Length: 153
Image (tube, rainbow, N blue to C red; front, side, top):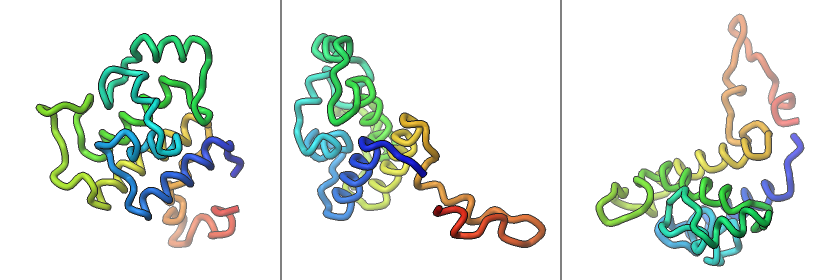
């Protein structure tokens, strides 16, 4: 499967963050977008609230000028973060009255958020979800429909 450079980089960064325990949904440096953007927090100035899908003035200017950050537009970054937060069990935008998971750094919670995030990243680039293993279990007449080498080719 052919993937874009931005997708490969984003998934690699999220993979490393997950396994190095440096993925934190509540920190703009270590959340999904923070990791995709090399642990920089300039992206937080694109909206007024963490998890918001609404670009503020700075975000709109950057969006309208076609600015990208590691290949992603401002609105794509906000969507990525919102999907990650929702997948982790947060209500968005983040605020003290909203729903938050009991242990936001729990690996199962982070994995759920990453699954949703990777699915969205793949959809943005028009490729099959790299985390979808459902073909492994498809069958026809009690036999595997696909061989492993067909799936991972």
